[in-house]
Image (cartoon, rainbow over all chains, first blue to last red):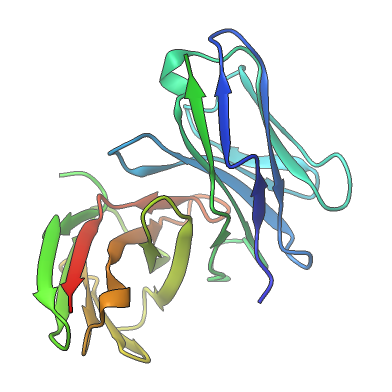
Length: 117
Length: 112
């Protein structure tokens, strides 16, 4: 069964450094997402992406964050200057359809654990 | 309470028993989804129930939705040790492209 893959599985970085988290969504999916889960807390929506542009973003997704689909297969999340509070598990997801009412489930990757020291 | 509150927070049962988890939410929804998360792993979609549906089955899973009470339940029948995981409800509040609001989760432990 096709799956969403994320690399790296664990990233350690120093405060202030830039990180890029990478994802390969399922090939025939058109909608892409990033969610994050701070240890012990809920999974939180960050951003959705469709047709090469951001569809929606949460208040967490400030100017320090950006997403990109640099080619036909990868989907990346960049954090420009990491803060301690960015430490979390970051999940990429994709869905076949995304628009309201289409009821298409999300397929998640196994996540990248980001540790900011 | 917040959107997507689940109870119990933790549930411990024996193999073969049924497990029931509940989810409450506050706003109107487009659909409600249940996901499973094994420790340190990603979320696996289990079942989706639309706002106009009341009950749905998938294998050993049974989901109910009561939009008047803004609540849902997930029943796992004849549980197995492999069902040990955290279970989350997620509501699609229909404000945008699959912006899911996740619940707090129920940690299920199934002992052999």
